[in-house]
Length: 355
Image (tube, rainbow, N blue to C red):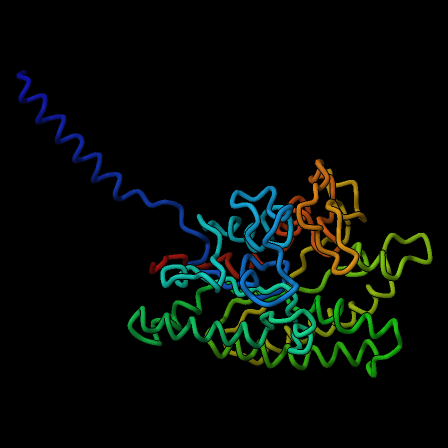
């Protein structure tokens, strides 16, 4: 066989190999897109250029994140990042503040530190993006998406196959209601305040549904009485490691949220709202041993890490990064629990993407 024939066979083989590689499908995510609404637990940079005290684009935040300080409120990935990984996305969902047209088709992160269900809650921190404004931003994205895809109907079909995560209410309690409750200056009982929040939340979640959302994970509130800020502010009066009064107050919201989600699923055609928790009843934290102290040195004024301070070196052993937010290690545990609750939203999904 001549050199020329060998070369021809080699070229044919390379062409066949190239053609074959084009047919190999890289693993697709479980759903084509993920939209995230929430507060500082999911904020990945939306507050950085806003006039607010609720922003953390400085060291030691992001010390364990590849991009360094990005506006995420812990040392590394937040729960939105880890959920995106678990769902099979090859990149984190982009913040609304910097999302491109291509980003939009994969989803957008609208989260804003300090935000709440009530507009008045976010105003306590300056120019943050409350849930109502996050919904307005989503409607801007929908309009852009309709132009990009050629029609509103195509955009709505795409949106109906996305997963939406909504986690709101933390700041409505921590910054708004609980300080008034302990000071005995609020006109609301815990049940009345929970009912007020749920009434607003119901309208907001219905608005999200009207904008095309069909698969929605709505996060319950965690045990806010166990965070370092609550312990430092109100202390504990018994053997408990948490401020159980705060936990009891918040539980009223969660009970009402379960009822709301049941009503939404019953009354909205094709809706699949899922009550989602990110903590377990067993309270097993694996290798995490410090359950009450922040890993970084915190400011007495706002509970955030002091800029430029050196955090603890054994960060995987700490539940809390600062006075409010979990470490990446704790967040990983929470994300896996939440992912299990969210499974009905993607168990039978057809994740063919259009981007």
